[in-house]
Image (cartoon, rainbow, N blue to C red; front, side, top):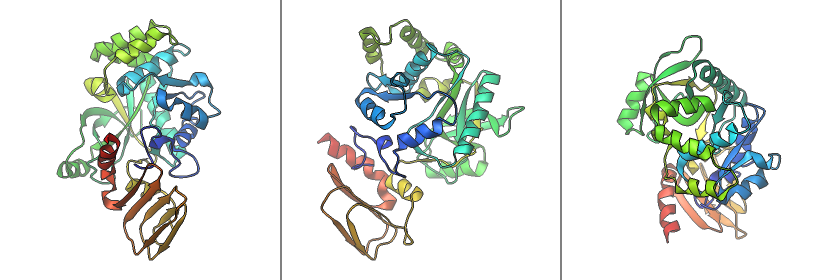
Length: 332
């Protein structure tokens, strides 16, 4: 999402789909799931998080000293939560940069995941029914209903991001869900799963629990950890998983094409923000955050984004490649 999204101010802090940031929208959704919401953020973004979520108590903002991957940040969250909550209470991990409109369906799907996880003592995932053969998402292979629950299945296997032909086969089989990275399980369930399938993670968790949260020892130990992804470090290792087929709309806003598909447009399929003049424009996304005006004439299927960090002009259908060129610019 460059030049809107930068390492200092990433996309979950941006107002992209409405007058709230993706983080603020996610926080509102999360509040429908339970009485307490924690936000886990890397240290360099913690001030921004506190500024955007003024209604959240400071002790509910968990600050990761440095980025050490989803496996270790989830362990840190479980550690913090376990110090003030019962180990049998389910915790839902959700991403801050997803776009979801159906809050009621979101709540019902996570309620189902909560019930399954508590009843079966298993980490439970939320999967999305695929609508097209995406090569950008991982897939969950489901196998067999779980008795007593509707649209809840055993997890057979995980598939990495496939090529197009393989993705088509997944869709045609009807056995696969997109893996959107949502997990539900109690601290006790995560601990027992680590005992059987990821003893190294369990050792890390137990070490964290024996340190003072506010101490330099805690910070130093955390920063000594390597970078691990929870899917590989734990989730894909265990055979004791369930998955709920989501009952809500969902999009991972990963490119300007994705964003253009979910925002309000004019009759010609255009989106304009800022000082923009245009003639004969169709199917364009134009956002100007600078004082100098942008003028476009006769454009179709184009993204134009102008900020103090740079100017992007791209065909909308190749917008997912923006990340590649952003890395080149940021490396200079």
